[in-house]
Length: 444
Image 1: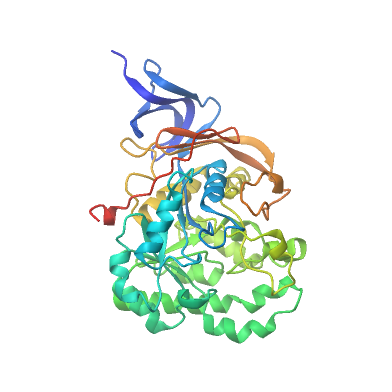
Image 2 (image 1 turned 60 degrees about the vertical axis):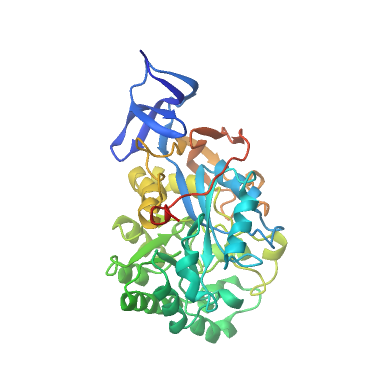
């Protein structure tokens, strides 16, 4: 008797751990139940993927969706919608909201706000501070928490942990891998007078490469001292890549599409405040160093560092303009364009957007297009040519630093736990996002 599935994704090129080849994907109860020739099988729903490529669901492990407290920039609903329109099936959201996510009540509040409003699956970082360091071992085990995030620079208030003693206290308390914004706050403070009013080309001078390198060297030393795992977010310098290549036993590495695609000083001259983020967009040799890190396997994951601000805020003269740019909706097309142009293989793209996140964060049941895993699929047309435009961005901020960029490769559908959520640039399902689960806290 022919097998019956809830959903069959039929006729596409499946790209996963086995390589690339034509296959169907059968889904039962939100899980991948079969991969292969399912031509004799029936299903309640069939998605025709002829001419398309079926990838494991893309996971963006660094976004700032600004809720609560900063909803005029973004909120969980608009950010989640931007994610699925961009082919992203799950996101990990950052703690620098107002109030900050630093205690159980704040995490519970975010999870409650996400329920019924976020189109994608989600988890939230708990912010590490001097005040809560002793309790982080308990906080990191809360359901819906993807781990601890620490700002060694570029933050304010209690979320800033600039000193070695504070970072060490955080590391001693935790057992899971912790994520770090690694810039040396002491050097940043010394260099702030170097900012030239209205001149964004001075941003990478204020936040120079040495600020990042010095912080990352300190961080690795402390991680080794206490025997804990670290994840270095948005690495931007060639020197950090070379250094972290020697410390892969304790350190995993994130790179962003922005730092792989944009380059100073041209980006600042063309985009002005829209090119401003922390750590900065840097010059050509650093961008080349990041690509070497991708090619050599030093980089583990791609994260968008989606961090929107309004166009009005961005128009303030530097340094009054805020740092950060949207990116969750453009991560897939920007990086598929690099695939089309030969800088990146599709297999490495998959490793950086799903397999890597599964490994680094210990995600339970996601991150692989394999039998028994959640049926999270990003379905793309590798030959589609589109132009990225401000007007098409779902983020509340309504802009992208890649406006006008013509790309080859486009997300055509987003499937989350067997539900077709986005198809042909339209969200077609109610918001059914759920918290992501993690292997180290399944019993929590």
